[in-house]
Amino acid sequence: MEIGSIILFVKDMKGVTAFYRDVVGLTPDAEQPFPAQRFFRFDTGQCKLCLHSASKPNGGRQKVGFHVASVSAVHAALKAKGLRLRPLKNEDGLACFDIADPEKNRIQFWGDY
Image 1 (cartoon, rainbow, N blue to C red):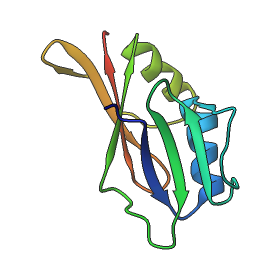
Image 2 (cartoon, rainbow, N blue to C red):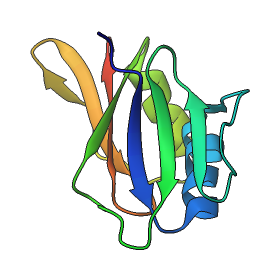
Image 3 (cartoon, helix red, strand yellow):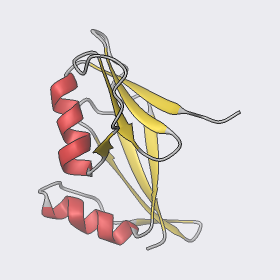
Image 4 (cartoon, rainbow, N blue to C red):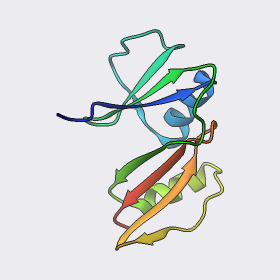
């Protein structure tokens, strides 16, 4: 058994979709099984990140972790887009930092410096 998707329930589908696509840099999945205003899927490898429209989202009560090749490169790229970021942390020899999407869902980037 494998995890196939992580679903975040969001109120502002257009705004949160734009954040993950334009700011974080995720690629929309080529196959979108449902109408985009209700459900949107990103191609994030074997486990897809999905956004699901909800009138009462879970904002801030979940965290999505992305393993990246260079945490410092992602940190610099997001900072260049105008995000105010905390310094990188060292967690057991790996670099990491967190940000929040427009609905306060936590996102962690981790991996080698």
